[in-house]
Length: 390
Image (tube, rainbow, N blue to C red; front, side, top):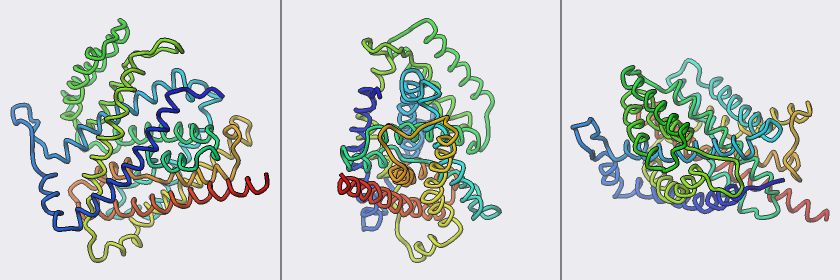
């Protein structure tokens, strides 16, 4: 199996950034439940920017709509690279993580729908669809060489496809009102970027400046501005050469550190500042809590492994190299760590309802904790069993 340097670097960065994210979550929760909580919330609500171009937003909006667009730019670059030259470049290689990702999105959404159809929480059906790349890879990486690299690649590719699915869901289902003039300007900007690619412009500056305008137009169109990051990514030039580093690969390398060690930690600090209130634990036993926790914990496990099993039995796909079904079960549980994307979708699902947002974020944290610990224990126990047999 050919393992690209980019996958090795991505896995390494994800392990380190995942640990940092855990620390940021703990710090955010501590701040929110201390005397610093109100001051921290006031900081997040502070508006910065200019009224001249209608860009006067709170700190939290700049993080969630602005900085997260850079996160999605990196995700888009990874998706495009893997489609062109990596794990998603052929149907044989891509079939298992793609079909597993589809199962891991459909089954959790159905479980959430079962519990919440017709309730005030119905709009959050996409919350348990998402997998957090950084956290899931951080945990699987803690097991070291006892877990096949192919399994880490499978989980990475699955999470990337999962992110693409989440991006499409946000664009289609979480858009409140479309302003067609700005949307048309966004389309023209994408066309301009595509022409730059066609005429082989390679310097990043030619893409990043129009990319900022694309973000501005997309933000004012009504479609969530983070989509601009993905659209921009798909216009960045790349190649299949093993010797020449493409503009896409160069930009990807430059973005990994700031995204992993600045943007994601800031997102975690800003969006997990949950103030624990009386009755919040009871919310875990509401239809919202059941939908999120069972969707992430059981939905991901069942969806990923059921769809994988069907395609492997049909001989369309095969298990990752040197991996086994017990390891696939553990990997399916790790995919139930929804954190970043799940919280992001929860914020969009329940705009203007801070109490519901907090309940959803708390349920996501609990579900991610259960999934992460369960997946780690299964993979660790299977490793011990294998070593004992050897």
